[in-house]
Length: 52
Image (cartoon, rainbow, N blue to C red; front, side, top):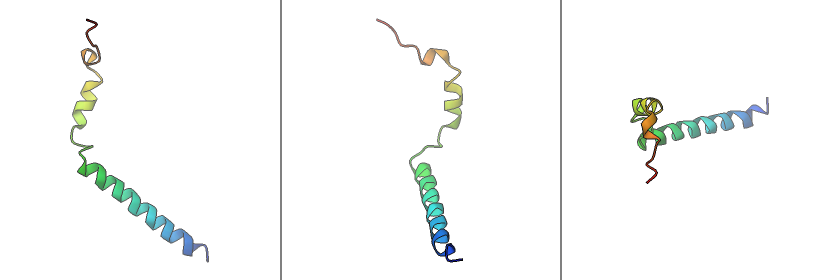
């Protein structure tokens, strides 16, 4: 039971860290264009660069 004194704060800390990372990703716009990335992989011309 003494190990719970260490494990509970560690679990809560990791949860807060994960929530902070999620909120940071929302604020920086990581989820703004979900359809663009899905369509970009199908567009073959987007990766080609002119050689000249």
